[in-house]
Image (cartoon, rainbow, N blue to C red; front, side):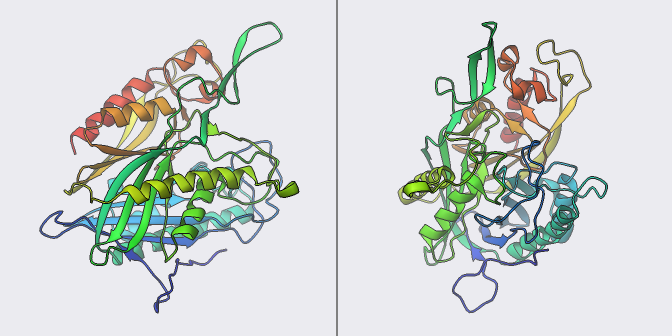
Length: 429
């Protein structure tokens, strides 16, 4: 499968990594680096995200990448990895994480391994009985690729300045649409419902070289599924988040790396959703490209407004597997008692910037509650991070039902417990 191909700039070295740091963060100072590798499959693969799609991929519309941002200060590290993939299902979370932890001597809490949740990427699997041979080879190679990506990134850290701001984008829409069935009863379907809460915040972190003020990277988070493409699409694509990353890197140029992260978007889809492919008829701009570009342009607008560096301070991280009340699958209305289910929560700080990684598909209201309760002025919320344990709906959504509630392993009490525990972890950093 793919050999490791580290993103290179127009420099003399074959491998280019870019340094980043906050001024006066401590006596030693904050150091960081960003990097990117190509993880586009070279063979047809089964595609993740839609059970109804059983055929192998039939080509590549746009490349897939893994991007890393590694921060280090006085022996403490915080590493953000953004993977152009659906997520770490089929028991792949720990094998991928452990490969990175072992190669880089990281503490478990120091690694935020996240997926952008594109539904047009290879299914990750290490199951020799059920997995397609091409997907097995792809996932096995990915273990080594990610470990090497993070290892080399950490080895190339240098001083930087970091700035933070936020914007807003209409790309996402709440997808829990109420409709009436033949009997006149209201039910929730996956569609578009602009009348209920949608987190439209675009969170942006700007990374510049400390000595030259050269732009090196931009980290952004936005709450939406990357599902503008549906099950009839058989082309590999990063979808909304991936196309936004690609737009930014092309627009900003000069070797800038732009890792994107999926915010709390369990109930948010792109405004245009589950389309059959990239329509270019009569000059039509394909919706995935339109949405990805629109998101990327908002990130670029926010980036221009960031002038002052963020408040500096230490790196601290912690991780916890939070046991939550379970729910019997298929009993969305009765919520019969069931064995507890767990959600991995990873939190960190770099000075006054907070980071939260949640290992599930968390509803946007929960993400907003965490950002509001956080003790930090800026708190990035990432989902599909260090785990993949399913949907986490709000308590109120259980009475409504719908796909997310029916498929969730968690009971309605999960919302409050997650917000409370995440807030506690942030306050204790």
